[in-house]
Length: 213
Image (cartoon, rainbow, N blue to C red; front, side, top):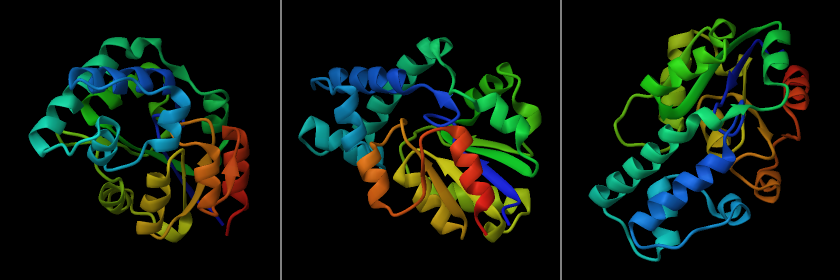
C-alpha cells in the first residue's frame, strides 16, 4: 500500500496558473515574442522549458538567452506571488493523509521554503526540496532521485501527485506510481494520453493514491 506521497507545488498544491501564464508572456515579450493564452499554454508547455520557449518564439535559444528569459519569468512571478492561493482542498488533504508526505518542486528552493511556511504547511512534510540551481526549466527526474534518497523511502512505497507529464516522468524514474491532477499546467487530453490515473481534485488524487498497491 502507499506509505508516502510526494507532492508537486506549482499548479498542484498552489493555484498559480494565471501567474505562470503572465510570467511566461513577460519572458516572451522581452525577446520580441507575442503572448500565449492559458489554453495554448496548457497544450504546448513542456520541459525542458528552453525547448518550449524556442517553439513559441519560433527560433532556437542558446543557454545564455534562455537564462535571461528565465530570469524575466522568475522576476515577474516573484513580484506577484502574493496573489496566489492554495488549490481547493489543499489544507484538508494534507492534514487528512495518514502516511508521510514530502514536497518536491522545480521552483527555486530559497523562495519555495518560506512561501510554503507562510501558508502554515511545513509541518505536513518530512522534507521540502526546491530547485538548487540558479536557472530553472529542466527535468524533475534527477531531482526526484535525490529527493527519494534524502527521505529514505522506497519508490515502490510512493505516489507522486502532480499536474504535468514531467511529474509522471519523475515518478517513473524513481519507481513510484503517479496520479495526475487536471487544471494545472497541462491540458487534460495530454495527461489522459499518458494512461495514468487522472483526478479533477486534490481529494480525488489522494483517494486514488491511497488505493494503489
